[in-house]
Length: 290
Image (cartoon, rainbow, N blue to C red):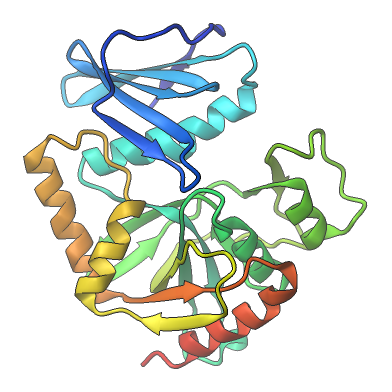
């Protein structure tokens, strides 16, 4: 899948109303979805517009950043939103989350396996994955879970070897002298010795769904398959919520995932000092898998 980047332009007012929106817990609109001819226009307010025009079974993709949107941010929007949206539209299984590999030598299990963390934007999933990486558990992805089902196993493919972090999280993981261009914006932090990256796909073993109460005490509860399905759905990437045939197919894939993979509700206080306890609790649940 390829795309074309156009020169920056202001986001002019649009006449037609969006048929869907992504809204963060604080009420901030993260994305708007509109129909545009035979295709779609996805607007990320203040950042970029992406036009998706049908070309047979695929789409021609064009991205227009705003004057204040840098090239790296535009590329991140493409990889972390447009690609998984179209991946699910064409029958894939993509979720919004981060993931780490738990080596058998560190987890006390017979085999290596992937632990995935799903959460809403700014819910702490990237920082949590970074804390695992800092403790020696390589990360596979920080924003997009890309799954492939083969012979009953869900293989999670590695994505980019970067963590997008705010300055305070980066400095917690890498030290107070970590330099940032802008402390108020997320920035790519490259993998390395301190934050190892897993370069090969690995089998998914568990999914932890992060709660939205950032002051909640630490707790882990395994979900029934029905509970898990309801909890997983908000973390899917859906292009057209009115396309019933594609929605049915996606719902079936998600239902199978909720039955095949152990899913847990994970609550914890969003405090860096809590992360060692969170890791220990997650690994205890992981080591109990049979």
